[in-house]
Image (cartoon, rainbow, N blue to C red):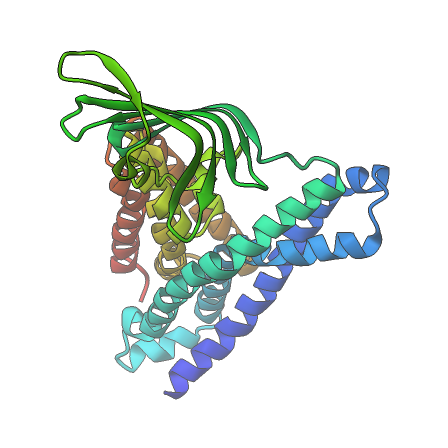
Length: 359
């Protein structure tokens, strides 16, 4: 237990210091990139500070993989350089057994990073972007005109002239309804439709249903209640807003992907981004595994080489994931493999490095 305690006393302060440093740098870079816009728009200092605070969780999220990689890589390399691991190996403790607590810690920290992102980073970053756009006069309306929305795998198609987001209301609405066997059912024309959150469907105003009879004549009639109950596409779908799966919580991303599936629209790329939300946090486990395998390669320039290995390993992982996500986008590989293949690959590389590490 004393060895484990000593190991964490070496790693944790380095990790927290590096996390603070990297996060500070990222926040300052974001400030410098927008400083001229703040000045030209006369944004008060307190508002700027608030935006920086809202951006801090995102900066911490970005910095955590680099910080843990640097901390573990530097601490182990320093132990090698000072011959402290020689005594540990001489006592019969292998490198894997000695560093196993770090691997367990990084594995648990990966789960923590996912929940941190889903519950804190996503909402605070969304607020940051919204408030920043308002202060810089870049905010856009969620109202939209000339809308066409496909639902129920193409069996319900909405066409509206305008959507009012504040009133959650559609104007001059046409709805084409098909049966489950894809045969034509009806066309509904309504002056307007208002979303009823209690019933979970659109309430039509000035509506008429046009239906084909058995002798193939078109008749007009009041809208059948059974058809109204099928008008359940949520108002968020009609907003003038392109949803980014990476910018919403996993729950919201799942709802968005289910909408794409219902509409029969391509969903490979959003689904791969959804899986990436779960796979990316495991970069913490991977970089710790890699740093264990890479440590002890030299006894000189420990700080410089730790930083170099830190940057190189992170860049290689990011580039690999970019390539696999691109392949998933164009359906060369599955969305699951697009997000998780880099994790599997780098775990194997880390195992090989550990196998041939100096002990």
